[in-house]
Structure formats: structure tokens, C-alpha cells
Amino acid sequence: MSTFDSLNPADGSVLASFPAYDDVEVAAAVARAREAAPWWAGLGFEGRKARLLAFKRRIVAGLDELARLMQEETGKPVDDSRLEVMAAVEHVDWAARNAHPVLRKTSVRPGLLGANLAASVEHVPLGVVGVIGPWNYPVFTPMGSIAYALAAGNSVVFKPSEYSTAVGLWIVDAFATAVPELPVLQAVTGLGATGSALCRAGVNKLAFTGSTATGKKVMAACAETLTPVVIEAGGKDAAIIAADADIRAAAQDVAFGAWGNAGQTCIGMERAYVEAPVFEAFVAELRRIAAGVTVGAGPQDRMGPLTMPSQPDTVLRHIRAALDDGGRAVVGGEDSVRPPFVSPVILLDVPEDSAAVREETFGPTLTVTRVDSLEEAVSKSNAGVYGLGSAVYSRNLRTAETVARRLRAGMTSINSVMSFALVPALPFGGTGDSGFGRIHGADGLREFTRPHSVARQRFPLPVPLLSFQRKPWHVKALARAVRLVHGRR
Ligand code: NAD
Figure 1 (cartoon, rainbow, N blue to C red):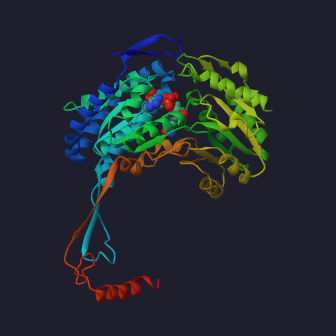
Figure 2: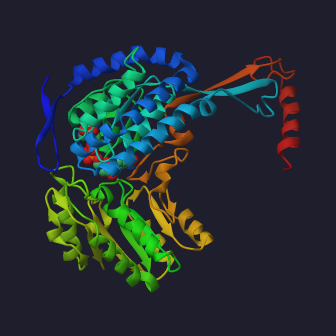
Figure 3: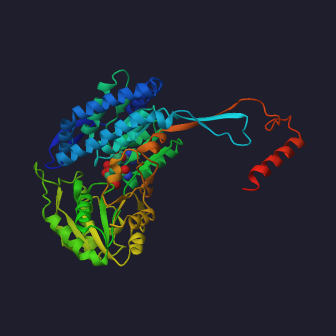
């Protein structure tokens, strides 16, 4: 088996080497998962819940160890890593406890034509789910698929990002201590080719989180075998700041949303649209905050390195595009890019058609744009190809909710940033180039099941509808009943 290295992004040192699974090895892992799946499904909701909660406790016990590993492998500050693990733990807990109430067999009303039937629907597991993850939130993000797919009764084959393989293996090992019997959750390590092999290995569903470009490749590969997909892809999230917002609080939020995790957050803030009366105050507040954000690999630093060696080039390209297109940098600029580190950048007056406004940067840059109305803010926020997260700030809750409802996004936080991700019951996902399908919440559980509908005859109808015994007068009698019930109201 060939191998690849995982590097510490802060200094480029090799942390470990891992096997790169090829097509045959991926197929073998899926075959093992296929054997484990009936046992896992057969444990029932209660059996799986007990084991998933044991998995959760194992993660909590290893919280600090896992957070250190995350810092080493991705460069994320250790407290941010801890917070990420805690958020993931909440999701494991929610999925474990809610799989039964959400997915269990439920009766539904049979309706007029089915008056003699008992009707029910049950959400049953799909079998084997493939999960392909990114590196930016190497625990929280894949867990949104893994925990929900497992709780729904599937076995899982997980391809962690090549930039966070050790973290991925830690998760799989933790699960194996809670569920030692069979390989219900396995990892296949490797580069893109391993992910591609997983798409073609006959899994029953593929949950992908990563860039839009790779998402398209995943979908194309899965289309060959009609394998259904969940695509959680990129974003270019915007914050809207109304004139009546608490400017200090909004600036704190937007700053963290833009620069936290060195800007490598799918639901991070890359654009802000600010009503004219508070524009200057908002920018001043952001500048004050930026001055206090330390960048480096030290224990006190609030922003670490960019994880992928190629990413600083994209960030630099976007900063240059913003400046070439007529924008100006009031904090940072091209000099902010000192690979592997990039310090916060605030860009003003950048035209909406600039690459810096249209494309996902995935670095700590923020364009801040003055708008004359919330109407204009909504239309500019909605103008791009992405539709992932968003944020609205206003002291008037009715205004905030009206604006939120008009945003073409999968998720919106009001007077808070990225907060929807912390609520396990809320479905998470996007629209447009941000993908489709949902993880988290009841929708996230159902995503990894197929509904099985059953209609049971309780007694024969005097009017045999679905039978060659039916006579013309049966249909006439039925039409009278339908006119009575549906013709008037
Ligand atoms: P990426 O697309 O480069 O890689 C994601 C995963 O896909 C990796 O495991 C990679 O090995 C694998 N892969 C690469 N080529 C493949 C192929 N041809 N077939 C199958 N798998 C393949 O993305 P990334 O750089 O790891 O992550 C950053 C991106 O992820 C950003 O665009 C970010 O917005 C997005 N993201 C989205 C969400 C969300 O929930 N919507 C969450 C986190 C990150």
C-alpha cells in the first residue's frame, strides 16, 4: 500500500505517514461494513443509543488529547479545537437520543379512499453510508454525518481529509472502544483517489463535505451507480448589519466569524453589508478588534496557520483582485499573507463582481460594504452562487426575522454568529453551489434512511376499487362521496 504524510501546517514537519487505500482496499472496507450493518441495525434504537452514548463518553474523556491532535494537524488553536469537540459531542448525544422518536414507525391518517386501511411509515437504515470529510472542522463536520448515519442504523466507512487523517483515525478508534464487536465505523485513509474509490464502492449513500468543485466530481461518480448523495459544500456567507444593531456586539461576532479558525470556516463571514448610518462605526469597531487578534502557532495566539499549503495563494489572489477592482484595505493587505500565516484583512469599496466578493476565499478576509437599505443588503447577500449560512443584526426582532426569511441560505443566525451550528435539532446544509441535503436534526437522521410505507387492509371495502370486480356504479357512488367531501371546501 502506498503512503502519504500528514504535516504540521505551522512548521511543515511530518507528523505521521498513513496508508493510501486503493480501490480494492476501499471495496474490502465497504464489504466489511456490509457484514456489520445488519448486526448494528438489529441492535435496535435502544441498543445503538447505549453504544453511541458510550462513544460520546469516550470522546469527552479524550477531549484534551483530541484537541491537541487537532491543533497539531490543522493548526487550529487548542481552545477552538476544544469548543469544536464539545459541539460534536452535543450532536452525538442528540442523534443517539432522538433516532427513536424521529425514525420509529408512526401511523398516518389513511384518507377517504383508504378508509379501510391502517397506514404507517417507518424510516429504515440504508445499509452502508460513505462519509467523505474536510479538514477545517475535522471532528464537528464529519460527525454531523457519522453520528446521524450510525444512529439511524447504518454502518459507516469514513474517508477523512488527507490534512486531518490522525484526527479521523482517533474518532474511529474511540468508536471501536465503545463498539468492539464489529467494524461498524471504519476509516479509509488517503487522498482524493481514495474518496473517489469510496464513491464507486457500492455504498448506499455518500455524504460529502468539502469544496463545491469536488462535490461535483463526487456527484458525477455517484451518478454512475445511482448512489444518492448529500453535498455539504462551500459558502460565501454574508452578515447584514441594520442601522439599529448593537454595533459593538455585531462587530465582535462578525470578526470572529470572519477570522476565527483563520477564516477557514464554511459558514464563516466573508462579506458584511452595513447600513450607511452605522458603517463608519462598525468598521472602526472591527479595526479595533483586528488589532488585538494575535496570529501564530503559540499557545496564546487566537489565529493559527492556514492548513493547506496552497491556500495562502488563493487568499492573496482575492486580496489583489479586491484592490485591482477598486477596493481598499483598511486593515492588512497583501502583506498580511505570510505563509503559512495570514493576519486579518478588512476590505472596503470592493465591487460586487470582484472575485473577492463572489468566490469563497477560505481565509481571514472580510469585505465590508455600505448599503442604503436592508433591501439592498438582502439583494446583495443573495446575489452569489452560494447559499449556506448568514447572519442578521438588528435590535428590532421583527426586522431581523423579516430579513432572515428573505435570505437565500440554509441557515441564519440573528444577533449571533454561526450559532445555528450549536443547536443539534436544527438541520444544517445549503442551497445552490453550497449543496443540498441536510445533516443534523430530524432531517439529518432521515437523510440516512429510506421511508418504508405500509398500508394494511383492516376490512374489505364494500366498493372494490383496485379490483376487476369493480362495477361502474361503484365509481359513481364513490364520485358522490368525493364531491361531498372535496367539492365544497
Ligand atoms: P476538498 O473538496 O478539497 O476535499 C474534501 C474531501 O474530498 C477530502 O477528504 C478529499 O480527499 C476528498 N476528495 C478530493 N477529491 C475527491 C474526489 N475526486 N472524489 C472523492 N473525494 C475527493 O475540500 P477541503 O479543502 O477538504 O475542505 C474545504 C471546503 O469544504 C471548503 O469549500 C468549505 O466551505 C467546505 N466545507 C463545507 C462544509 C459544509 O457543511 N457545507 C463544512 C466544512 C467545509
